[in-house]
Image (cartoon, rainbow, N blue to C red; front, side):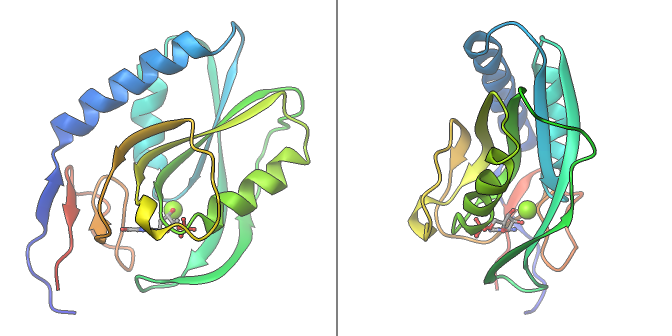
Length: 174
Ligand code: IMP
Ligand code: MG
């Protein structure tokens, strides 16, 4: 693929405004108590950092690593855990924080794995969703933006580990 400059799909201002709305909604929805925010490495780290600060209640954060995508743009269709949680989530209200849902394979697998650890509740917050690409069902409680089937980078999202530090969410064109 030749490198052209990425086209902005969602500006950093639009992203930040939407995350503030999601934070308020999450504060309203949950009963009092600590909310466990679990981010999926590495792409969701930027979203986690901003979402956590948009939530008023007490939160704990942790990270989980999965691999399904190689260096390219298409999924291998298989998921494995590359890094497990450091904390127990038994009896906790858990919110999985993900950058983007594409086929749904990753989250369908992770929900299954984490549910076996008996959290009190488990929901998903995804900044971006490409519903047209879904192969496995995923119930997403909080969605930032639904986007068309285009490959996006920036704000944590990569192509072959590059572009994560772009402040805006951009479409990578051929
Ligand atoms: P899924 O298992 O197909 O839903 O894939 C989810 C993962 O694929 C995300 O966590 C991303 O790491 C990656 N991914 C899917 N679509 C894109 C994209 O447009 N840009 C960058 N990464 C993507
Ligand atoms: Mg990811």
